[in-house]
Length: 283
Image (cartoon, rainbow, N blue to C red; front, side):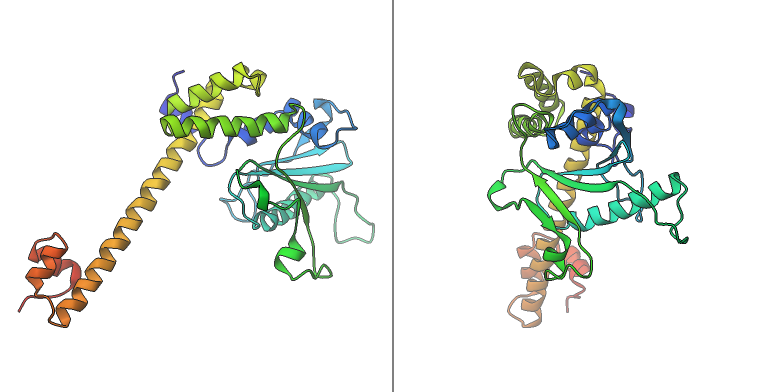
């Protein structure tokens, strides 16, 4: 597997394996049937309505598609739980319907009642803390004290699939990747091992075999983002510790408990460096 920087850069920020996988009609149809086990559809019934941008230019939803003219389905994935997902999905749904009315040339300002597919909202949670995850999230209950007379949106939470369906395969894929990251770190080795193991276990095997380079690029791009974020957090924590230590030493100098020279030694700095950082001048 050889993924260039150019390949990786194409997938930064907007894409993910989840978005890429279910952006393919074949797998979107499988997702729909996993959530509606008594129905059968084909990829021809799928029309993607995933948002490229919403109210804030940096906010994107994961997957949205229309099944015929009866259902608009929005599906998000989370590995770290946050109830705020129901607020985001409310925004996604409003924007999706706005686009739908534009596409079907229906006006909201005439007397004729508009027609639109019913919404179904799902979150697929792939994290480990499943004991505390609700089966549904309600915008009203979570944020408005249960007052559904104002507005409400309900999101069904899925923590795993059944009998090897596409949801179960995706969740297993995330587990394998996390296991490989714990062994090798966020790098090409973890990515290649994840793909190898999943193909061996017949987990998303067709998808991975047909799009291995593309999937690798997506995963490595996000690994780079994660590493940069971890470095940023580490630097910020170090900065906070240094600032806190200097503030304490400055206080001790002002109380004449320490001299500037002694404070500089405690901070592992020269006197000049300590004076510059602390704003103190030796007397």
